[in-house]
Amino acid sequence: MEVNRPEVVAEVTALADAYEAALTGNDIPVLDALFWNDPHTVRLGAGEELFGADEIAAFRRSRPAAGLDRTRTRTEVTTFGTDLAVTTTVFVRDAVRGVGRQSQTWVRLPEGWRVVAAHVSQRPAG
Image 1 (spheres, helix red, strand yellow):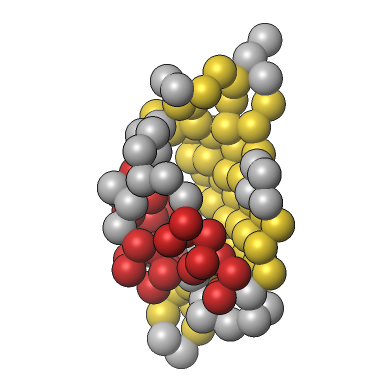
Image 2 (tube, rainbow, N blue to C red):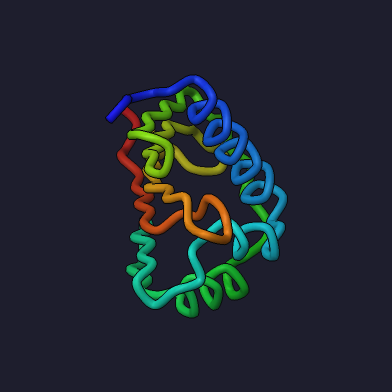
């Protein structure tokens, strides 16, 4: 298995950028489309544990649309072969003190690349 094939890294980097734009713009249809529409999809957030695409979608629709802006300070993309990737992002938000961390596992499925697992956490500034 080849790690970090340049063309696969480029694909997943573009998806990570599209996810970021959809997240900060609260573009729910794009966010829904980027996650695997399956009961096995998991998103562990800073204050919630969401299991399945339905719980994730419901969370997105119920959260406030304000205060979503953030600045990514670092994003790493690691790919394994042509169909599996992990993205790791560090970010800061003006409205929240501390450093945010996000990791996503992406899999190339018949319908395209999708996030199958995600984790978001916050650590205090310091």
